[in-house]
Each structure stands twice: as structure tokens, then as C-alpha cells.
Amino acid sequence: MEKTLNWREFIITRAIKASGYSAIVFVALIFFFLLREGLPALVEVPLSTLFSVRWYPIESYFGILPLITGSIIVTIGAALIAVPFGIGTAVFISEIAPRWLREIIKPLVELLGGLPSVVLGFLGILVLSPFLRRFLDLPTGLTAFTGSLLLGGIAVPTVVSIAEDALDAVPRSYREGAWALGATRWQTIWRVTLPAARSGVLTGIMLGIGRAIGETMAVMMVTGNAPVLALTPGSLFSPARTMTATIAAEMGEVANASVHYHVLFFIGMVLFIISLIVNIAASSVVFRSKKRAERVLS
Amino acid sequence: MKRIFSLNRHLIERLGFGLLTLMALLTVLPIVGVVIYILAQGAPAVSLEFLTGFPHDGMRAGGILPAIIGTLYLTIGTAVFSVPLGVAAAIYLSEYASDTGLTRLIRIAIINLAGIPSVVYGLFGLGLFVLFLQFGTSILAASLTLSIMTLPVIISTAEESLRAVPQAFRTVSISLGATRWQTIRRIVLKEALPGILTGVILGLERAAGETAPILFTGAAFFLPRLPGSPFDATMALPYHLFVISTQVPEMPIQIQYGTALVLLFFVLGMNLIATVIRSRARAKRQW
Image (cartoon, chains in turn orange, yellow):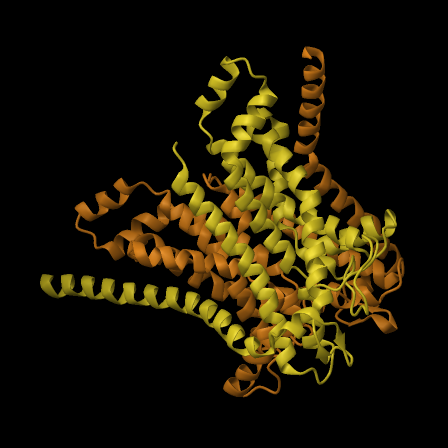
């Protein structure tokens, strides 16, 4: 009895330890497979072609610059929406809203985080883009801006939950000190509370932007998918195509191990490296949240 | 002079608060709008035939049963792989790991897993499960891909609820002669169960709504029958919604909204269950 118990305990403990390392194994595996399938692209496609402005795979034009600028412009648009609204909502929830309102708004924002992006993309096609086409008088409603609006919405919950966490963690005595000195609540928010929560708010913004760069379905459905180099702010109101949408739209149709296949994996590799940089940067910001799970969840 | 200044201060505060309130409302109201709109537009399309029938006429008529069943299969498949692994990893982090460099590396890996774009998971699943391990485009490959994507959510929430169990519980159990594993299984896991369950459901909710990771690992455009084994491809609600709203010309709008409604119902239902479990556990908790 004693002995079998020890054996069982030994095996279970081993299994638990092995599971503990699984996250490292998976990140390594993902990186390995992206390299394995993506690096051949560097051999098969001359660098001058890869970093050119024409993406037209059928005729072997594999210029990824339009895709990169597409991702950048859509993400900038999304950030311009998600950052002010995310921070504004977080401040509202933690500093201004009465308790009952907070209990309504917080779950709703969490709900937004849980909405499948394909549902948002679907409404983007049917409701948002026709509206924008008429409202802004554009030739098409499927533009980078439409994508930015949806992506902004998708990134907001991330920004809100982390920023609100950070604001919550600011000791009440900071605020009381400011009030005692005669500052209004508004002044306290801007001069004391927000600066004190700065690093957490920054983490939220970074992870929100990371989320926006990586988002696929909603963007693919509403941006019009035209691989055009986007360099001016005006490009925001014309169709664009992001890196994620390109992979999603084209991977299903390419032959395995073809040049096109390898280039798509190469783009995936670039996305992976971007997300690695964003996440490591965000987690190395000194902010230490008690609620790490919420950060991962959002 | 002084009075005007102080009036301004309070005016600014009023305006500022008004602005923030407006921003919060502009963030929240569209969410409510989206849910209500899809409910209103989709409800007329949902009937027993819609829920239990197969699509026909090039998906322009009939039901969406194979997509519903497919999403169910994928969610269960994801749970089979990600729940044991995720909970075990959480137990390791909360009960065994000390604060070493390796543990920190594990945490960085988890944060990074959470941030990897879903379409990149799709690529990885294609490379490893579909091609290298030769599972083919299948429920198995798609479930494994979704599991790895869900893992960080499950690990983090489970670890948090394990850590919330007071240290004294463990001390008492060990002092009564229980082994470490007995303590974890009978005391710690039992107390942390509602929290773990909440995290698991929220993770699976996300997996159920995802499209990009299953695009090239397991999703089928159209199947005339239900999948018979884990090595078959399957239809799935999110992918089906994508297909009928972008790939099928002259698709009746009713069916599109109906599909969106069913998907939303699936996801929000899971969300609701998680919320209920969490709040009931909080109310019952004695420590």
C-alpha cells in the first residue's frame, strides 16, 4: 500500500512537472515550424522581390511591403480608437462611475472581448460598411478605416481591463492627498492617479495594439483586401490588405511546399516575431498585476 | 479673478466627466446594440428545421445542423486536450514551482502563447498536425490547434484560483499525514474547482468562436453528412458564418443572421454559465 502510493505519487508529480514545461515547448515548437516552413522563402524568392511593392502571387510577385503597410495603417487606425476609448472607459469605471453602473459596464466590456471576431466582421459587411460608404461618400465601404473601427472595438476590452487593473492598484491615499491639497477629482485623475498607473496603462495599450495586429477574420472581411501600398493618411479610406488576412485568404488555395506556401509561412513568422516583441516588452514593464489571468483573458 | 478661476476648475471637471461618461457609453452601447440587433434579425430564421436540418441548395436553404455539431465536437476535442494539460501546468506553477529562472521562462512563454495571432496558430497546426504528423484536415488537428491556443487562458485562470486557496489549508492537510498529492487533489483542487471551471469555460468559449485557427486545419466548406471520426474534417459555426457571408453569392440574409444568432447564443451561453459559476462560488465561499 505504502509503496504503490509512493509510486503513484511519483508518476503524478512527474506528469505535473512535465505539463508545467509545456508552454515553453509549444512556443518553441511554433517558432520551429514557422522557421522550417517560412525560411525557404528567403532562398526561393530574391530579397528584392520579397521587399517590393507588388503582391500578385499568381505571377510570382511576392512583395510583402503592401501587406506590412496595410497591417500598420489598419492598426494605427485601431489604436487611435482603442487608446482614448479604452483609457476613457477604464478611468470612468474606476474613478467616476457609481458602483451599480460599474457592475453593468464591466461585464459588458468583458462580453465584447468574448464576441467572435467573425460575428463582428459579419456585421461589418452588412451594417457598418454600407453606412460608411454613404456617410463618407466613398466608392466602397470596405476600407482600412472600416477595419480600424472593428479592430478598435476588439482591442478596447484588452486596454480597459489592464488599465482599470492598474488604476485600481493605485493606493487610495494618493487620491486623498491630492484632494486634501484642494485638487478637483478631475485634476487628481490627470495629475496623480493616471501618472501613478502609467506603466500598467502602457502595458494595456501595448497588448491592445498587439491584439489588433494579430486579428484576422474581422479585418479580412471588411478591409476590401486590395494589396496596395498604404503610405498616406488618405489610404485609410481606401481598401487595404493586412498580413493576417493574406495568410487566411490564400493559405487554403496554395500547394504544399510551393513558393507561395513558403512566403505565407514567412509572413506568419514575421507576425510571430512581432507578437513576441510586443508581449515581452509589455510584460517587462515594471507593472506587476495581481490579476495576471485577466490580462491573458482579455 | 480667483473666483472665476475656481469656477473654471469645476466647469472643466464637469465637462471632463461628461466627456468620459460619453466615451464609456460609446464603448458599451454598440456592444448592447450588436447583441440586440443580431437577436432581432436572426430570431425569425431560427426554427426547429433550421437547427436540426442539413443545408441544401448550395447552402441557400435548409438548416445548419452539421455546423452546430461540428462546433460541439471541436469544443469537446479542445477540452479533452487543453483541460488536463492546462490544469496540470497550473498545479505545477502554483504548488511545485519555486521562483527560479525556469519558472520565469514558463511565465514568459505563457504570456507569449496568449499573444500569438490566431492565424499563426492556424499555420502552426497546418505545419505540425495536418502535414508533419499526417492527421490531415481533421477534427483532431483542429482541436489540437485550438487546445494550444486555449492553454494560456486555462493555465492563468486555474493558477490564480489555486493560489487563492489559503496556505493554511495545505499546512493542516499535510500535518494530518496526507501526502502532497493527496493534499492537492482532495483539498486544494476541490476548493479551487469553481474558479478553474470558470477559466476553462471562458477559454473554451473563445475556442468555439475562433475561425482563423481552423481554416486550414479542420474546417470544411460543406459536408453532406456528419463527421464520423476524429480524422474527418467538419463544418463549424464561425467558419460557416464566414463562408455564407463572403463566399456564397445571393445568400439569403435571413440564414446569415440566423447562423450569427446561433453562434452568439453558443458563445454567450458559455459566458453566462461561467459567470453564474463564478458568482455562486463567491457567494458560498467561507474563506
